[in-house]
Length: 210
Length: 284
Image 1: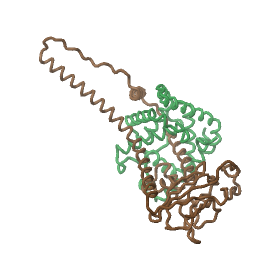
Image 2: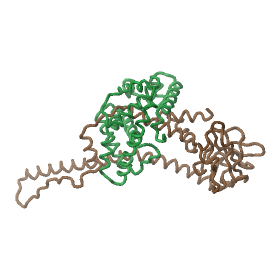
Image 3: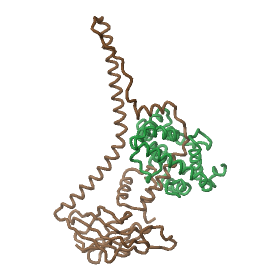
Image 4: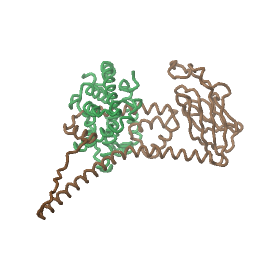
């Protein structure tokens, strides 16, 4: 595990857990299908399987428990309404949920604080949690979190900073440049190279990977 | 980076850090059906989604589950509001006023609850409806432009056909693995020949092109439409086709009365002058 944290062996640990992750996503997809067919119990099962990730992400973005709770409710209500429109070709159920959660949390963030005064310091967007921190829904989620954190650990701190400001604070590249007092070109390069490096490091987690 | 700035912008767009004019330009570029950018964007979108998993999972308060289920599947029969029937007997006036006041409170509370639910529901759907509305607005704009184009008095039409059955140009580059790009060396004999048509308005300087059965190109290549007058070829559009070789898009036609139109296969991003094989052409 220590090796992984140092970013030297992400690929080597993916294989053993990859099938497990695929099975996890397949189970979630089955719940979404049931939900779309009108199975009301499927929503509760989906919530039980994913709510810690959804709530954890909302909390990370909003840093406010009541707001994160509202967003969590909103997300699953939207899931219940739009289950029939879920398209597996456009992403896994987990990605669908996380995109929805991020979008709603950032909307809430923008409603509650104008961008100019939003608390977007690195203290708010960072730091990454320790590998062992936080309760997990199950071993799959824990393993997935560990893989992503290991991949992030391979980036430079400057790359991580801009990606996290973009992802968790919802800032545009110009806003990040202003926030960090760095040239826009530098910020653009960090975003692009950071994402490309993550793409390489995490390609086994991508939907098309076999 | 012959495909700059789209490749770079795809990364910013995927993490929603692109804004303003660049965002609009990139979205317009996506509507041309650029396969390279669509593929890259899908990949990077999946990468961005994984960032969510770096956040620590936190179990929500237990009451949240019940709150959700109550919200989504409210009980079929809400607990009845006590409504004691007043019997026909003399009731002290203060009791009547008190009852009226209490009933009023219950009614107001019920009304507030109903309105709150309605407001919540409206807000919830607003985001979704906004996205749908934007899509519809874009489609409507395109439809209007197309309608105006077709209905214009000077609109002209040209059919596009192949000099020979459309075959992919320079299919396999060095180091390219066979079969990686479908539809090249494995062209199905049953596939109809490539064809298409183009309508354009010399006055409006734009047109609309539809093509069918053009073979998907290898990575690094693109189709390019030319408006040719004499020996001079002017690039009108760079585009890709879908799995069945189809595309339909608005194109600028800067030349009022070209002699002919041609579609060639060129390096990604397009070239200043046609260099690849002509796959479709037509003369007005």
